[in-house]
Image (cartoon, rainbow, N blue to C red; front, side, top):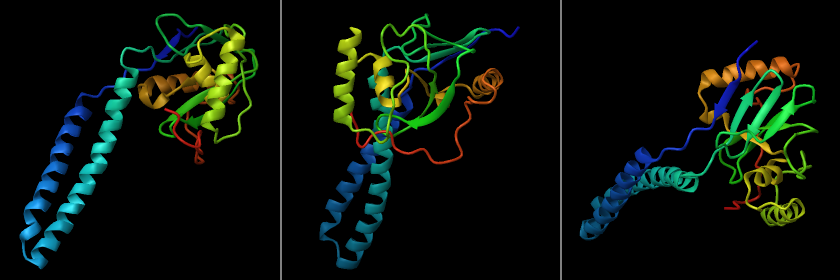
Length: 230
């Protein structure tokens, strides 16, 4: 019998991005200073230098935005529990905020399908598992019908209604997953070690007769939300 296979989402890191963001900010500042200093230069020299500095500045700004986004991700998730998945002989265990225990369970006897969706801000791709019966939800539905892209205002209202009905916090990860993806079981395999993803994919396909896989789809995945909700 195969041993349990556990996939825990690693914490995002931002040290490299923070250093790069500082460097890019200095470059952007240097470009601005250089363009100001060249204001009194002759026409041809001034415009040639401004074009070259402008290109450098745009590249630096783009890089700055990318690395600031990574720093923002680190700040958002710093100290917060992240999703984890466990494959066992009896089924699939899951925690939306893993602290050592898996709250949800899906038996291999239950029909399952899976899909990839973009994140709530339409960046990144997440693997979603759909099953009609998920143990441990405590009054929360196992599935919600979705028509993407979703309206952020409607999503917030639906989360509030579900939270009130189930007696839980509206910002709980399970409710966020349910409303955004239609299922509480969501994980980002691109953050996990490739060898573990391959091993989990093999087990998933074997236990579900090929209905579920961790392999990304060949077709393009559309946006999940109409605009950012955070």
